[in-house]
Image 1 (cartoon, each protein chain N blue to C red):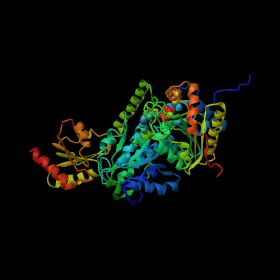
Image 2 (image 1 turned 180 degrees about the vertical axis):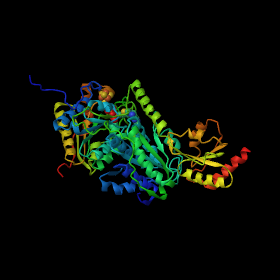
Image 3 (image 1 turned 60 degrees about the vertical axis):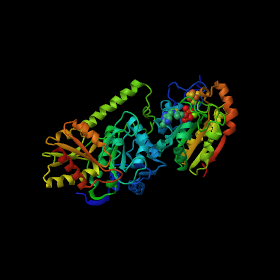
Image 4 (image 1 turned 120 degrees about the vertical axis):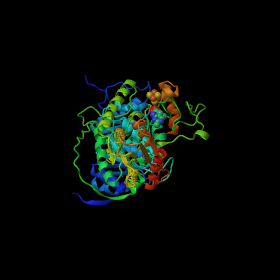
Length: 247
Length: 355
Ligand SMILES: Cc1ncc(C[n+]2csc(CCOP(=O)(O)OP(=O)(O)O)c2C)c(N)n1
Ligand code: SF4
Ligand SMILES: [Mg+2]
């Protein structure tokens, strides 16, 4: 019988620790499939963040480094400068990338650092139990915005893709979601394009994946997808924010 | 023999690093070490290396983490406030067993402090930086020539023991010009191959992982214990100090770095005045040469620790002599350099008081 579905080689044969319905697992699979399809696993070095995906170094079969909270783009820069012919990517959550690691992110983009960032925007600090993230929506209840995010005192969510698209060093930036089959396929195409952008030496590429955290949102996986579609997608519209790959 | 050239301490660090095979430098400007970055910025592109001015010391040090994990000889340099920011990455590198060289051209603190020379980062360099159970090899040059020799040595030590190594200089050494010889001394040390580095698996081996996270207490404890075995070997084999006129010395001065030079002058002056003085100069601050304070103080009636701080190394001196000889302290701080006559006066005050 022909095998039609199998674990990508770039994904280790170990159980992932993610909660049921968490979109981290889907995105891991997409990244691994892209590595397989591009045949780059053997020359890829990934950087794991601090956040729920901290153990990504156990999940991807390529060489991996675990970075301090928010520093993945700096660590990736160090790796890429030593091995410019290798493929280097970071995998980061929204707290990691858009709060503590904002400077590292913005400057990696501004330098046009030839790396790829997979950015998981779930509007919350998942790992530490559901605190407000820089991407938490206005009015959204979290452990540290128990009355809902009050924009008067807690400010506004950052739209990372839009912000980074203003840097001249960014080559490809797209926001995708993994809420339905159609969007999952789109997300994979985007991730592939981001890695291809790096392979072509075009500069910084980032794919923002609008994601769910059913556990800390206090919703079932299904409700979480619905909440994401109804609340996050209007604030974080999907689409390509920067494409300088033809320049 | 190689020819003598006149160079500034900071530039000597940079050139020596390049000669030691360092091709990656990540920095952020801060006085009084900026010449290191400037030198690297000029030289690295010409020799196929990388100079990168990061957006902060936090980033620069984490770039070092990445490059070290990728298997390169890599260096960063800063001065006190910047080293505080690099503390994070230093802890992570210690925890991930990554070799690198970190330069601290110390200036006065705390806070923004001043830009004049100081030794007030001794505690930070030898007892801490970042969080966690770990040690750093800390080298303290006292001349520009020693800076040259030590920088090369620092890279070897880092690679052999898989640990960050810090060179603790100060603004005076960094800015000082002295004639030096850049001699390609063939290192007799065996530098292990970096089979652990993330260079891409080429689909020929298991993936390499650079990491400091271990959730399971027994796993982490085992790793820390192994690391401390390594630290023990470092203590046993890499400890260094200089003893100057200590054999018959009744009064021991002790200090490191540029202060040791001032103390040496004081020793000579004191001997001319009939006071049998000697000097112990720690060259490695960690491991601290504790034995020196037993072996070189056979005839000593007192020890005076001199520092450009309010007294930090003096605590290690006291621990080393363990009450056997009284330990005194003289220091200037805020960016002030002690004059030899101040040191001599401090000695005389103690001798007078001891009578
Ligand atoms: C310096 C530092 N500060 C704080 C933490 C604690 N911490 C761990 S994960 C995390 C938030 C991660 O959130 P995010 O990046 O959104 O990832 P997610 O878990 O949502 O995927 C925090 C604050 C840490 N490990 N290190
Ligand atoms: S806490 Fe949230 S982000 Fe983390 S694994 Fe669970 S569902 Fe996913
Ligand atoms: Mg998050």
